[in-house]
Length: 215
Image (tube, rainbow, N blue to C red):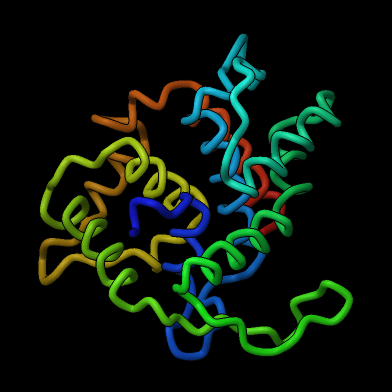
């Protein structure tokens, strides 16, 4: 099932503490990563393309990912904004849709109650542990064992790296630390290079927000 998860859902699943259902990393950092993933979902589906350094609508295909839908709607309503502003504007909604998607797929259990739409003390313990193990195994195969990533896995690794969320990824055993592989994939070598300018534009926006937010 992990291949059926959106990139944003995979980010949240990796970032959650399995037992407590809370994020192991700063919520702002995670939400920005999920927001960036929504932009990449639009690019990977062919809905967006890069033109003269800007992301523009390329096709009429309707995105399936709810976070990507929210991103597309915001972009259409605010074409004058920069990718950095898009990421900030959609981040909370993108995180919310990722939680809901994981819940609907039976991978997390919503625990608690929201008040006026706010998360408050709501937690999401992981119930789909086998799927989490499979996702970690897929990343370990790429980072620690040298397997070539597919396009979506390369995009996932790239977003995690540039969002400063390396800690949620499986670490190499012994001396086989995955830092070199991680950097190679995240900087656009190999399969990730095929993602082109759209991912570079998204990563640049994500990096700018992270730096300005002093995360």
